[in-house]
Image (spheres, rainbow, N blue to C red):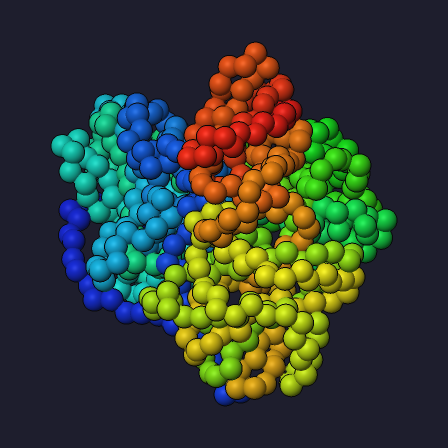
Length: 630
């Protein structure tokens, strides 16, 4: 394949040897004037944590059924969700995503790091240990013992670092085979290095000790177990017979997921979008995607594009056809986008499903179809966001009088209710640190600033809820817009604060920092995870003590097909229990409401009633009707 390195191995495997290595803490520092910007690893994975808050069975998904598989074994991690497929794999330590990789073979990779399947650190004390594992189910290879001419090859692609943190040279990515006696043998090892293109590995399985119906293979990484660091990406794992060296499945697949359809933001409040929907500059006019041809026939592709509105109806589509493709090449194609979205949906939120896919001739032998479609969810809730919700690294700033600010052009006059900031725990204890949440009406480097409001005595917090954002509710009414505001925080002390950084989007022209009395424009291509929140109906995420009496709550979107979200006029005194009842009054779901969102993807289409009950104050009980569609 073009632009990919190839490593060919024909192994007689040796037994695995375990060792203990010393640890080194990695910081990437960039000096600017008299201050230093520092990038460093995350200590957890908020995407996984958030998923597990919605999935009560996530912690028990390690022990899956060990039914024996037949060849071929194929997985390129293109499926939806953050865990590897339980149809193929026995454990779920790796993180399936499309944000930590750089130019993958096809959409979706499995990322190995120092974070467990629940999104937390494996250890806070060990310097090095074996961390993530990815173990196949047993596979039938006994036939090879009576067929001496078998050509069984395992191939896969790997990439160190990607868009995350590079593994140290003393850290390793390892592949093991399980033989007929149950012994695991190391067959391939790669030492850490800085980011490289995805490289292909081909392993010819010839040793008869692997020719049983209980053959398995396992990937694992060795490195720091106390941070979301030491990243390795694996893609396109393929095991089959009758292969030749460096061949591949006949396939083409999408390379990345679609991007935001907005010209400025990843997300913006629904009411704000409605106020500027008639302005064509609010939306992007085109969407560019790409597909990789892996040993597929030459000729042309037929890319398609769809947008599904909040009711589940398709309101826009585009079909290109005639896009040239050749074996081993990446073909790019550009869709025209609509000039406006329908705006008449009720409520204060809306969500549109965006699909980019390949219209494939399914009669072609060995066509692998899971990677033919990529998805994006265009959300309109109550906040502005430049980031995509995924933090790849942390950042901090050294110096004195430190300030951070992101510029937002607010589209209508509205009440600024809160600021949401993703702070990730660092190796430093930040529990005693104080910050000031701030809003400016003007910032012009090097020294001009107009402070609109600040809240003192705030603390950096990591909230195990939606995307790990902490929500800081302003202590006064702030009416702003239309026009520019700057939202951020002021540090009371010179410490590495642990601000989350999205490396998949670039908003550096909207980002400003002050150190030693001087404002500076940020110059690194990335996005800080700071969001302003607007409007009346708003869930107070991260606020521990609310004393007002409860009056009402809202559920949105309605109709809904995947998730519902809750907002409250005033939050209840205690934790809430939820119960969903069907039209006949039968309970179909219930549990503790531990997040402002709830997955309804497993419900059948129909009418339901959502009941919230205060688990201590029995006098509080409220019910709302929702419509579920699929």
